[in-house]
Length: 347
Image 1: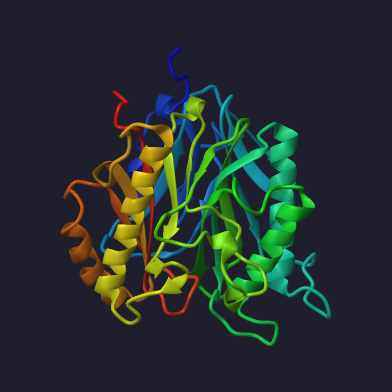
Image 2: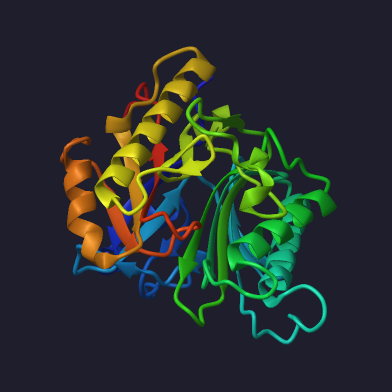
């Protein structure tokens, strides 16, 4: 039986999106707009996640466009705007910490309340729509490294995320989604977008790194709830979705203060994940030279050093998007995520 739905991602300029013909839009699941959101026709009701990070090294606003085979339908459930087909769901939710429903007085902090509400609505939408398996999720929260009397905001986010998984009776270890969590500009809302499926993917862990959900308590009262990578279900093409990957060996940050070395170490970790994914499926279907990359750089001044290091490691024509963002640990200078299709794909 042929694969009917293949998941893919394209990086398309905001300007070029306005010229895409109507048939092209029929396969679009959703969009992450890095800078300004594109102005689209309402004909297909495409959910757009307004990530709102500064792009580096380009003068053209870029959008991350997720696509899959149709037919697709769109709608809203709660605050989740979604688009879905038979085998996959894209959704996004935006919640401001200033929202009247969010309270930080005497109980959970505002980022914990926003995270709890966002994940509760995401899980409710997934279950209601018939896509109970979360494959990949992106989280953008302002002031991620800010220290407060209740602890660092990223650690507060992790506590609320884990509790949301438990409340929805979902696993917090093992078969958990791939994920990224980055810091956005102060004053931004919590922005989350995600991919889900009616059938489970396959979580992949790294032989070089401690599983994030097993981090020791020195990284906070609740470990992060994500896997290092996920292979999508067969009907979505067995694509490899690699989480945000940084210069961490075991559970410790390495090469503190050296962005070039951190970039190289991040790629070593990605290479190990690619090998682990190939081992998991029993054949060589994934390659670091057949991936699409999104690179988060903490300091814009480090862009050329990061880009030069990657140029020595990757094929020159690979799509790479560079964004400025704070990383989940304040001693990390770069984070890289990736998406890979099986090499045996044709067309």
